[in-house]
Length: 373
Ligand SMILES: C[S@@+](CC[C@H](N)C(=O)[O-])C[C@H]1O[C@@H](n2cnc3c(N)ncnc32)[C@H](O)[C@@H]1O
Image 1 (cartoon, rainbow, N blue to C red):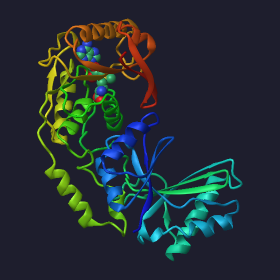
Image 2 (image 1 turned 30 degrees about the vertical axis):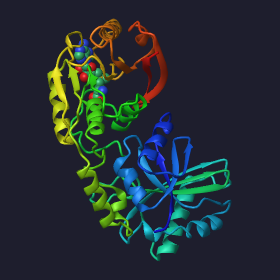
Image 3 (image 1 turned 90 degrees about the vertical axis):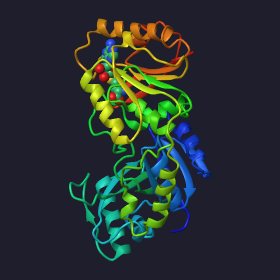
Image 4 (image 1 turned 45 degrees about the vertical axis):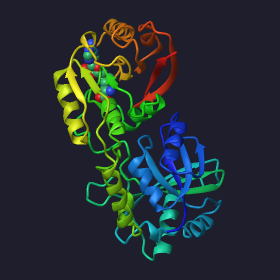
């Protein structure tokens, strides 16, 4: 396989963090920040590296050469020039996702059908077209087609299951954060594994586990499999070399990484998840007002209840909780750098801190990401 045009997709708002991460991974050819991700050039080894090591990307796509098509025959002709044989074998089902905007070809089902025709023409047999994830052992190859103003961009997904599914979270708490969002916020705060870390309301432990993965230099995707492993071009020797290198680079953290929650079952879940991830995190059951830490500095990051997904908190209870959190920031965590996700500006105000704020979406809910001003 020759040089590829690749695209790492990311939650909007984290494109710059992703760009910086890719540079640190040695991905530096034709890097271009775009809405919702970062485009770059690379070989298969870069594709593997981005999948294995990106903490913040949601998936990595291979982009075919874009082309113009305003008739179905042009679409089939151009789409059959994509080297499908590099991604598909005889029995790979394909899941073709199409969006059309401001284009002559506007009927997405008809476009999907013609893409299947083009694959059939190129491969010599018609592909099995499916929709959504399969329950069987072979996941469909997702193909993403975007037609905007008659310009067609075909992308081939290399990740399979989205990258936030690292494989360590067997159980979740009441309102878990996506691992990629947790890592993105950690990176935005400059967490590099050399600082102590605490989440005083840690739930299933996503923030401390992601912090520990950074501090122990563990590849976030080490435990999972990827769609590219099913490609005829899969280079097992290169992949194994990357895994061996990742394993050899793991080191113990030199700082305390801890999580607290008042709920006993939640702490058990967080501990099980950390064990599954292979990281060392100290989890303790404690209510926020009783949390004590050993370090006088470090990074605190927390996802406070919003009063939307988890029931049981009256608005007044929630405001009290945010006020207690604000008090903890001024006392136990006085020397710490901090950030937290709040359910609303009102709740953030209840901490009585001077805050820098930006909106961050978490699982479809608009939250306010607050840091010290
Ligand atoms: C939004 S969840 C955190 C989710 C977490 N970031 C995750 O990924 O699973 C908030 C957590 O705060 C805990 N909590 C609520 N009030 C608390 C208090 N006063 N003291 C300690 N923990 C509290 C809840 O038990 C819950 O697990």
